[in-house]
Amino acid sequence: MTGRERDMTEPPEYLSAHIQERVAAEAHELGIRVDVSGDVVRLRGEVVSEEQRREVEATARDAAGGREISNELHVVAVTEPDGEERLS
Amino acid sequence: MIHVAAAGDLHVGPETAGTYRAHLTGLAAHADVFLVAGDLTRHGTVEEGRVAAGELRDVGVPVVAVLGNHDYHSDAEDEIADVLRDAGVTVLEGDGTVLDCGGTRLGIAGGKGFGGGFEGRCASDFGEPEMKAFVGHTKDFAGRLRTALLDLDADMIVSLTHYAPAEGTLEGEPPEIYPFLGSYLLGEAIDASGADLAIHGHAHKGTEKGLTSGGVRVRNVALPVIQHAYALYRLDVPEGRVEGTAPRLGTITPNHIRSHT
Ligand SMILES: [Fe+2]
Ligand SMILES: [Fe+2]
Image 1: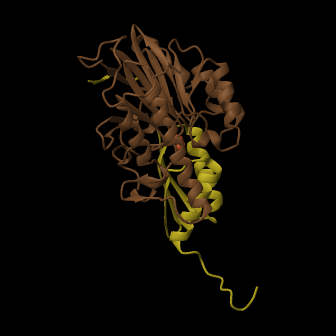
Image 2 (image 1 turned 90 degrees about the horizontal axis):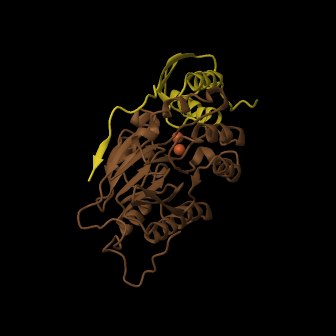
Image 3 (image 1 turned 180 degrees about the vertical axis):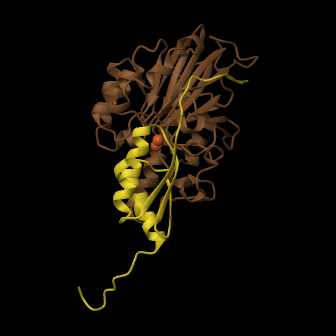
């Protein structure tokens, strides 16, 4: 390490972008909102399964450098449709 | 009249095998056809492709699908398409198909599509080769989509893509990423063909309903958007358009050769 390098904590904006990138690359979720404030990383958005919800959290945790993860991801409940839209 | 079921972004994997299919038991009672708007898998592996094929096999109606960006992630898109075809799914890649739905001919043309953005805020075919390749991929596809739509000899025409052909159905997504979600070039191709409906997926945080600039109805059927296993649309052949006989469109150039593909 040279004298010019500083041991500084990453600005939260960069960290949330990096976490988002990791979530996209490893958990393959592109639409997850990641907000870092202080020691908490907040995850918001929708995923299609409980497994996916856990995978996104695990990936984010891995990239979050020991910060606490607040997993506010919502699993979309898929049910049969209740109606038909008439287009004409 | 045609009843169309449509869904996109199933994102299935081995750990969820069979769960999506469980919601398709009522499909055949409500729909003539099932359109799948891409992102059938999560990582685009052949294994996930097999799971997707299992979910869509023998659901009681013809299934027509396109692939999405996730289905390309592991460079196995051709194998995934083959696995789906082996399960009886018609996979469109810039081409079209015509189905007989109780005497009404439903024409569907489509493919994955690509991004680039929308009028006024879009990438242009200029500069570095990487940028030209990005825009070129969309242009290329839009050209094939237009031809495929125009070539359909059918009473009702539906465009099926993964990427969005219009901005309206992206509402809810950050505007900064619109160029990665779709392209006006797709909308332009759809408008030129006078399609009756344009189905897409990909924009998980978008909105279900929109319109192309030319007024064609657009529906974003990504599962997180429709919040159901599929959406149902009823299409009525407009009065004056005689089912099973007359050429469908006034917008087609007279010398255009209509062929059934
Ligand atoms: Fe998706
Ligand atoms: Fe996608």
